[in-house]
Amino acid sequence: MEDQVVQAVKELLYEVREMRQEMEAFKQEIRQEMQSFKQEIRQEMQSFKQEIRQEMESFKQEMRQEMESFKQEMRQEMETFKQEIREEIRELHVRIGKLETKVDKLHDKFELHAQKQWQTEADVYRLKKLIGIE
Image 1 (cartoon, one colour):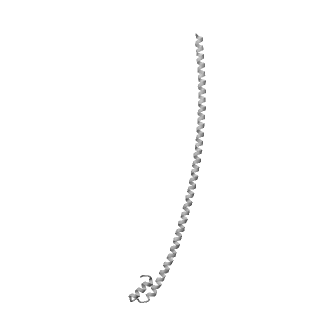
Image 2: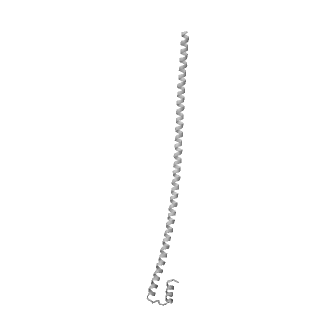
Image 3: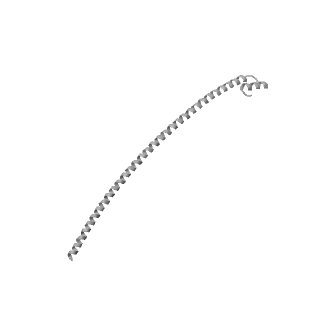
């Protein structure tokens, strides 16, 4: 009977060793799968980061181009505006010159006519006509 008990204990020990080996093999397999999974995730993350970087760089380039285009438009509009203002200033100078000439002529007429005496309504009428008031 002792032999049978010893034999049963040996068999149990053998089975326990086998189970331990299986468990160790399972642990190794799980570790390898985890390592593989980690590696895949790392690669996917690197790929994702690279895609995001490329998209960001592309977006930056688009924004730079749009900003440059906007700057050019603004410069052109400012140049056009400056040109219009310069033209208006030139026109105003011409008008001012004409007005100054008219004022000078009127002043000269007043000087000439101031030396005369205006006594009648006909004289006043002629004076008004000379200076352009009717």
